[in-house]
Image (tube, rainbow, N blue to C red):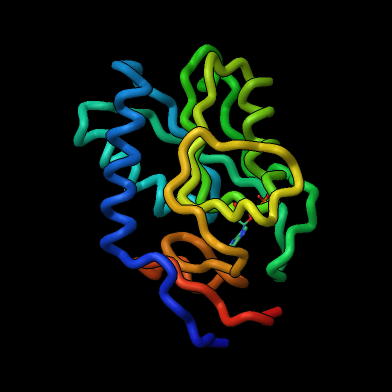
Length: 180
Ligand code: IMP
Ligand code: MG
């Protein structure tokens, strides 16, 4: 099914903001090379752009991914988080970890991933999300870095999907209200 999408964050705005985030992260990291942990599937595009902007600023990073699930086909969270693909505790131990996700919604996913990385022995976990929907928060979790704060609409594109579609769009768009 195709939807009547509305552009919410255009491509050039994303590029500019990702570069600015990388510059801020470079300052905070202060010479430390992080282990970047991207959350699949949604954060694959943001993670890819962010690590290249970090490399441009002389911040080399290792990159790995975790895959967590909190959503079925619908646009509402089920609230429980399960691990589909884990990252290696050995890689995490004593590292400065940069945890990257596409969007912070209820907060359950990022809170779960953060706690897991701490349990694996990370020295420090810095969290960075491209999009934040603060109106939908159910757990109190404040990310360290946010690309854009957006209203309560279902976002697709730049890695984010709806029922598996739209991840390849170079911009962030919203689905019409009332989409199941
Ligand atoms: P949370 O656990 O409720 O914070 O949900 C976070 C996860 O749900 C993200 O990693 C996304 O994959 C997905 N998600 C939440 N809101 C949206 C959205 O508007 N569009 C696409 N995926 C979303
Ligand atoms: Mg996701």
